[in-house]
Structure formats: C-alpha cells, structure tokens
Length: 170
Image (cartoon, rainbow, N blue to C red):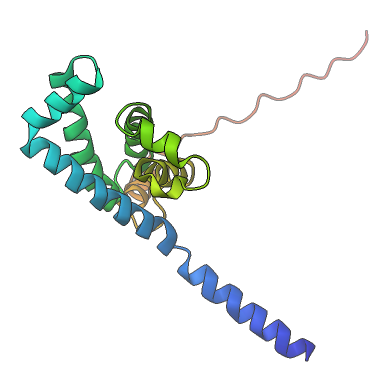
C-alpha cells in the first residue's frame, strides 16, 4: 500500500510540475485580452472616455484618457505576448487602483467585504499583482528575451585575487 501511495504522489507531482507553465500563461491571456478590448473601446470612443474622466474629476481628462486607453490597449497586447509583463502589470495595477477610487468606488463600498469578487477591478488588480510578483512564466517573450540577452552577455574576465601579503613581525 505504501508503494502505491508513493507512486500516486510521485505521478501527481510530475503532472502538476508539467502543468505549472499554464498558470501565468492563462492569467496573462485572460487579463491581457480584457485590457486589450477595454483599451480599444476607449480609444475608439476617446471623446466619451475623456468626458467620463471629466465627470469623475480626473485631472487633465483628455491627456489621461489618451494615456490610459493606449496603456490598456498596448499593455493588453504585451501581457498576451508576455512582453514586459511585470512593468505593464504594475502600470495597469495603478489604473485599477484609480478605478476603484473613482468609477467603481460606490460598487466597492457596496460589495465590501463579502462580494469583492463581483467588482471587476478588484479581481483584475489581484491578477496583476500576482503577475508583478511572479512574472510572465516560461511561455513568454520575457523568458525568450531573457535567454537571448543572457547568452549575448560578454564574459567578464575575472582577475586573479591579489596574493595575500605575509607580514612577519620583525
């Protein structure tokens, strides 16, 4: 019975290890596609986005509308590709914090604490923080670029350490 349990645990661990690439990949795809479409919608309707930002009291609404729309659009694409994942996840996290403090403030207060999963920016923020902390994962352009850049680094010559001086008391 012990051998059977050991075999089951070993096989299970191998299966889980083989599938670990999927967690960051699926998270990036879900969050990236979400931001791609919201960013595209804001870019297509930039006038409405700027007017909405004006109503929320966000300073420089036109500039912020253009910036946030572009960040969501291009950041979404980069998350899907796994390119600059930690940087874009951090930047997009800040947009979710602003959304929670402005557009979704009433919803956040009404749903706190029992129904926080119903507040989209909260869920996206958690996924984004996870990506900031853990990165893009093995199936990403970040990983490919990391490998390429590490191969092309010139090897630094390590100078031999200076011999220790033997000081003898005279």
